[in-house]
Length: 543
Image (cartoon, rainbow, N blue to C red; front, top):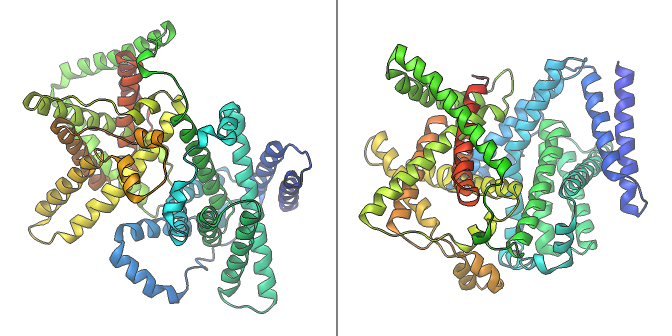
């Protein structure tokens, strides 16, 4: 088995080497070869001989402790995020050591732990990208690329088969990470041979690889303001490799970042493309209408079953279920964040997060219409939302998921946590609600900022079309109060679960429900709500 594992590993890297010939202009099936290489390495990992776990052997130098202390004081929420991600890398080391021997449970645990660590490391890589951008003037970084739809690259993106493009970008990101880490490992071995001791070989090798990556990017037409953020990402992924001792974590994180870049480029293209008028969207076709009715019928079937239970147990079962869902937030948070024997999969958080997303939607719109009766005023759909609603469904998912993740990171993980720690007067309950209301009010007011005017004030050279698209909601008290209510519910979910993933899923679900209702009408909206409730029945409870 050990010989077969070594042969598969060698075959995998050989396939990666052949796929890399594409960069020399030799015609080879890059996507196919990279996919076969990934399968070969995965099979090698499954069949290899497990090794004893030796514990953590890599970390930041002690010289960085003073810098870390300053960052803890100035950016506590960001440092908390970094520490959580670093802990997941450390946790993965044990599963990396135990995988092999043809054991399916050990392989599944290794895979889930690696995916969890990669997902936690993606925002850290983005912070590293931001650090690189800050070093080379962020205003110049933003001012480029806003006219992508009119460029040849933008038109090329629209012409490509999207599944084929996604597969190709995935293969390129995997291959690029393999080559970067192969260079890092080679230089590390060289420096060790030259007598470097301790962690010095890793840092020296990272510096050399960083210089090589920067030279490669500059040689291929990238500007400093484009290359420096990419260099920041690569250095963060090299650290993840050293910390987790596996190719899985940096490769998956790099694929996620690559696909996010591809989707972002497609979003920019579609935002400035002529997609038609939202007022001319057709009604729901017959097949979709049937599916909507089917989903609603299944929901009514579940409601009839609940009614039969209610006749036996009384209406108290509704409050019992609500209490169970509230308690479940805490148990899910503990299950996800604990240093458990078995790694968690984020799929277990999806049903609970989506169910609370319906609660956020209801809280927001019930508050909106209550305020509307006192101060009648309707919000017009802003241009950027109209253009977004006309995009393909996968782009809607991407846009709303990224938006929800960023807003939760800023307003719940960042602002709410910072306010709660800085407010000193009163007991814990007073401090909590003070921080919750202030952060929710700022979150609501954020939606009324005209970012087109902000770009002009900062002197950023954006086109008139881009500036017009960045105009958002006109202020109304009903809209402001509705979003404050949504912000309060999100704070409660975050505080109860103590993890950011559940409020991100809930926020995303609420936004997506609104988009489905605006674009496809009431039938699809009700079908979506019914599907979320049915998902609760199909869920396998994890904690």
